[in-house]
Length: 180
Image (tube, rainbow, N blue to C red):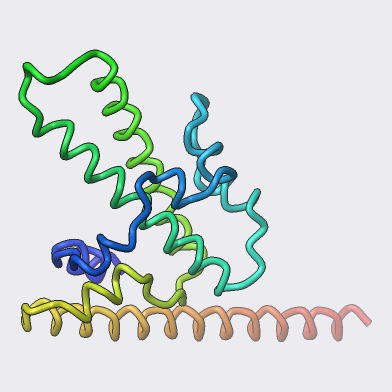
């Protein structure tokens, strides 16, 4: 998963995706998620996910798309604020830039937690766009190979869980037989 994420992060974001983005990250994620992300308290992505009451992988993918779009918007704002000339900076812009850095960090954390909670989540709109408009064959090969490895690792973990459950079941039935 990490290899795949690294490769996808290195790919250019297509212009067709950029055009579809809203003007602010808040519009992208919605008020409920934004409220959790901007709180001055400690931010725990797991708490945000549990409060959203996600009932299906489809809903999880929709949230991942929204968070990833907001993440990209905030990343662009942070890069723009860092690229501005020192003479153009004002105190309110600096504090807004700091806010965007915090929101960017929290969006990354939330997206990572979402992908960990739903490991079989299909690719987001941004990932699909990057793959569709990618011109680097080497990155395309690495991305598809890492996706295959990720799928195999998930299957192996599932098989291990099945074996452990079967083992526990057999142990419980044997101990029950001897207790009678």
